[in-house]
Image (cartoon, rainbow, N blue to C red; front, side, top):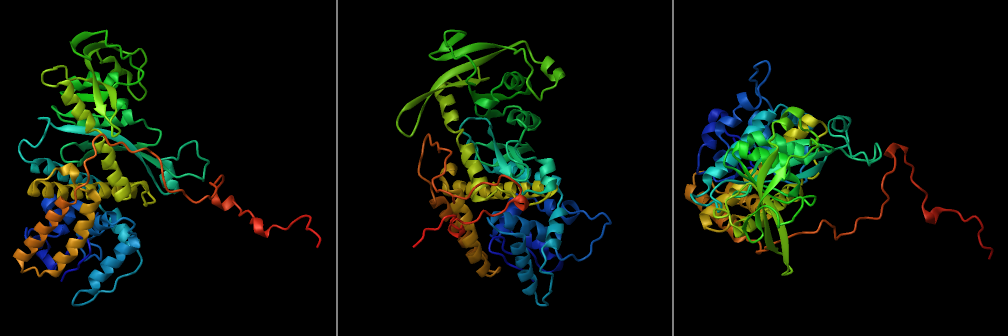
Length: 485
């Protein structure tokens, strides 16, 4: 008794043999990948979807089936809840005794709402941790974990609940805009996995969300970000937390290299004094604990752009030793910062996380976690292919990996479960195919924030749709003074 989907393969077996089937490492399917990267105990019904009355009745949408159907929905861009329900219907129709279930997607949505969001966060974090452990010894180029931080914005459906939790920008007319969520992500530079995230309202500053992630960092981490995050508060707190940071110098800071203590050419130790004005969002007690002055290192590095020209960038960092961290090493680290933009592009464009679809904030958070989990699982497959086939991880295509897994999972389903060697051969071929899908080497890549394809020339809404009236077509307008023949 099993069902198959194009993405997940088998997600149900006879009676109590689900756990035993999932623990077979020879089932090289998407669900086996989930089992390899997600601890089986995390998908236990008691933890993933506890029932308030302790009821263990035979549900149409049990927790594991709901979880995998939700994951397949997020990994298939454009898939609706109706499509997920149709997959479940096809599953029940494939049983020896077919079971007719409702075609309505409301029970499926209720089952998704029973998923514990805290447990989904824990599963996503465990995937990222296992990816860090799967890295070969000495694979890190920098000798310590490098984590890249950046922010983005997501569009939510225009419902009253979403508007109350994540209001639309004030520049938009009420009833004519969409709720906006600001999301800050912390990625691993070695694996590309999303480690932590901090959502907030559109009006919330990324610097304030960045402070929320500091308790989730570990001593010895090296944080890389853009010029927005290199504030006095961050550079003063990082040494106290055992962290280090590398950020481009803010444009409001003086770039005079005639000051400070000289460490080399365009390399100085500078003394920063505490600003008089407290930053917004920071308590007076936390601001009072900061020292009156700090010593930071400012370095001017040269970065090559695709046109062959050299661009000078001034960095500020807490790495004060020029022997351990030379100008060339800092320039290489800065050159990798653009990777976080590509990670967000994979999430927002390939997985279509740019516009979420749930109508309530509680479900928005679950949908967000499932997108992030699907992203980490895809990155885990890319890491496995890179380690197995000895290719650079960041040269592999995210979209190509997702397409390859979808097609090869169908081939794996056709192979009988008893043919272990054939399944393993198909899985190895899938990893080899992922490893061959290499993107071109594009050092210093920067994409302009513009669109090439012109949208339709429809006017924008200036009032709620119910108050708008279609203007008469010009061809239907009657002429006031028709010409006489």
